[in-house]
Length: 135
Image 1 (cartoon, helix red, strand yellow):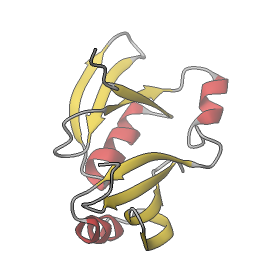
Image 2 (image 1 turned 135 degrees about the vertical axis):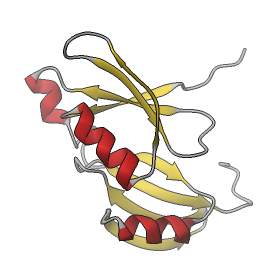
Image 3 (image 1 turned 60 degrees about the vertical axis):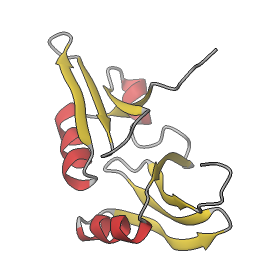
Image 4 (image 1 turned 90 degrees about the horizontal axis):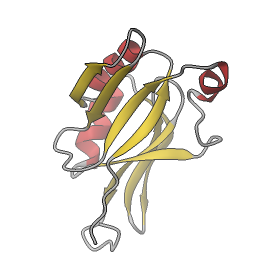
């Protein structure tokens, strides 16, 4: 049996502001943007070259969902953006004013820094070592 993780839902305040951040600031590409109803869209995005999992931008539809925007995991790192060139991406993201809340460090598994998206969700920018079994 083969299974894959298709999409991860990211609760956002507004589709267009989220799209602007992810496409302009993080250089993600839009895979799909389909209107489902007057106030609901199916918006899939992914980093350049990503062969697998994508983000589903899910606009908050209730006050409870809105209260979770930016803090879907209680302040823990939520998403992991893997790269094949950490320093290239770190410099580009810094130039685009991405807020890094943990400076780059060399760990046993690779090079990592923590940044926040436009809502405050924490992400790892991560280049795994070639010998890392998590690859």
